[in-house]
Image (tube, rainbow, N blue to C red; front, side):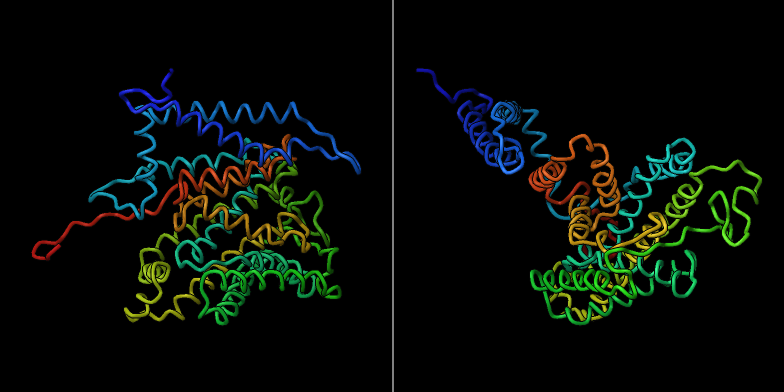
Length: 429
């Protein structure tokens, strides 16, 4: 009788078969109702052949993966993943990060990018940078301070509608509303922070979710002020009063005529992209400095153990409010860019799905990790555009990606790391 288990190097055929069968059952449960059943009016068609091929591909892939992980090379790779998911990584003393070479290269690419990109690619990059801002803001609240916020999109909406309403009722433009929207969103963040000072975990998530829905419903139902479901137009950006259209309003001079340039319909998006890059760099620098200041350490202490944080004499009220305020102000700035980029805002752009997507960026990138959040923002923004031909399955693929990340990289793409410090002479370690 053939033995199912054998080998001096730990290979187990029985284990591979069990993993394969289990993966096939999971694939049947997941893909059966979605891929196997195709609605046709009030009836449905069962696509059995397509379902069988998908399940077969999953089972073959799982068998190959299980067999590979039982080899010495596979065990080394699996051990590396397990080690990378454990806590905060402390770099050795004197470690020089590769980012000192990568950042200048990325800056050079960012400068050259708008001159070679098409309008479509440029708009995708703008959207990616907007989500970078949103991810960095929520990373302060969730990743650093450990406060689960499911209504973060409300501050995003405040910034976007602040620009549109400020222009319609007060005549304020892009540059005027950029700092004002940050202050308005920060005030809303502080207003939300006070009622939730004593809440934790699920209760905090429910309250913040309710706050996000309240803002959306107000924008949707206040027809006389916000335009309701019909939305409201937002002004385009200007450069010292020069507009980027072919013809300026009110007899002004457009940008290309003032500088004697050939008209380019992409000028508006190039300008938004350039300003966004500068703002993202400023936010990255400020966040980098804050995480190394006492307030950043206080956020992390609050995240790890609030009771211990308070016992050390830290004012948990100010720590929480500062996290909500700074995170909300970043979302307000992102909202202004979104409104001027779209030229139009309405409540459908600020649903709970947006909050979930921003939270997914933080979780996927790594809780508290700045570089990870930037990478995840572009991954979750660019990937749907690349998968437009699979529009029916984009949400399914997104869910599969999150499940795989939670299994293989539970700390995110890039986990938090700290620089090591040498012990001073005469000081006990």
